[in-house]
Length: 459
Ligand SMILES: Nc1ncnc2c1ncn2[C@@H]1O[C@H](COP(=O)(O)OP(=O)(O)OP(=O)(O)O)[C@@H](O)[C@H]1O
Ligand SMILES: [Mg+2]
Image (tube, rainbow, N blue to C red; front, side):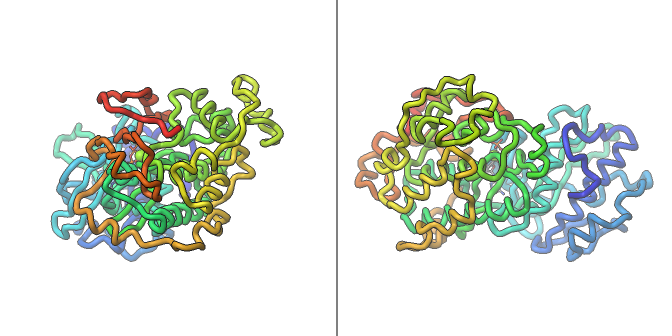
């Protein structure tokens, strides 16, 4: 991480004042310079700028160079390293996140497809949001096949001197997100394909955890899949460096409620990679159930559902749990039996899959499987072996995203038979997963969502 960025809280000051304008400029120069991607066709940088960094320059040389920190002459406040978003033509809206909209777009000259994620200036007076800066800094660090690739940051421009630019994060475009694919009942994953999804997801987690980053918002909508079947972890808007979290100061109101692990629900502030592995377990089960398995509408209800599936939370199964802030405050009962395999076997006919799930959905985070051990589980090393997703996805010409997938009713009869891709009877997908986290209001729950569609529960 660069020393240029604040490590916690707040926003970069208003871009109106010249000093902070300068500071934002430096941050963005740092960011856009170091995200210069050699795989991006076309001329990414302003050809008229004297400061055009060579596209092959490494991120470390760009970020560590002392020339980025000095004051800038007035004529350089125009963000020469931050290109105009007009070089991309918007095609369609593909996402509506809590922090802004996401568009599919095309580079006007090269025709390369990208995703433009608008930076929501929540409070313009406070300048460029620290949350977006954090996401950018983390994405700069995480270059891996199973992590979404940030190409650059772009801005809008105007000749109006009072104009405030809008900024966009520009990503390599991925054709689908997992929530969109699971919403579409015609997309049936066989067991080998489910293994490939989970193997890539765990590979991505293994990498980011090795880089000491926690994702903190694992859910199917944040898992992207390219048309060639390559899975990418996305949405690092809530991600944090692990060292920042160890200080006991950080919020436990992260992770969309339905994927939130018991330690966060019980108030833990000193948490680590196991929080993302719980989410991986929820997503893995969803590969068969097609809808989120634990759909609580409050934190207490979420904990109760977890207890009904994973058994009562007691110091016997989870030594030290009594020290968590909310453990004594929540009456969750003590007599529930663990029923993970028993409840999921109506959907999942593979014993290795059930065993892996049982080990990912372990209440005590210190006993939960880590990504390395999960990748070594027999599930991935038994027949059928993980199978490329390219063939399956080549059948679908249009993209499937949580945001764009029409809410559709499943055809229960067509899915009967209990194969790996079969949803249970009467399963309807909600289309958009509610289940809020601290970035938005909790989703509506019950048997109907806001659109009057059914949302069935798995259990
Ligand atoms: N690179 C990409 N390629 C294709 N689609 C993308 C890409 N990045 C994001 N999307 C789509 O946009 C949606 C929202 O993006 P993202 O999750 O990054 O935004 P967000 O504002 O943080 O969302 P939320 O608050 O809902 O979690 C994703 O669920 C996905 O459908
Ligand atoms: Mg998201």
